[in-house]
Amino acid sequence: MPKGRGSNLKDRELYEELREDGASKEKAARISNAAAGQGRKKVGSRGGNAQDYDDRTVPELRKRAKELGLKGYSGKKKSELISMLRNH
Image 1 (tube, rainbow, N blue to C red):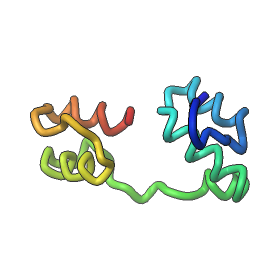
Image 2: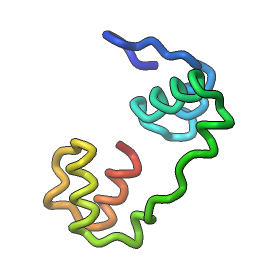
Image 3: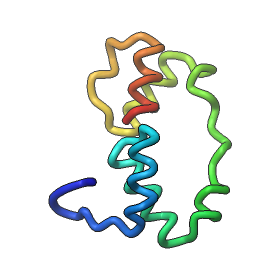
Image 4: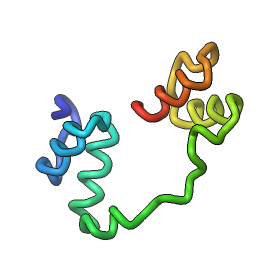
C-alpha cells in the first residue's frame, strides 16, 4: 500500500487485487479510487480506444513516455519502451 502523504485509498480491497495482478502503485490507487467514487462497473466499462503499444512506432512510444513523465526512455529499444510504459 502507498505510504506517506496522500495515501488515502478509498477501495483498499480493489487496490490489493490490482497490485497482485501486477499494476503499479500509482495505477492501482488511481483505479481503486475511481471505482470507489463512480462504481466499479462504470470504471470497468471505460477505455479500450487506445492503439496497442506493439502497433506504435518508437517515436510514438517515446512521445507517450514523455507525456507520462517517465525518465530514461530515450535510449531504449521498442520492446524496452513497451515494457516501461506497461509497468509504470
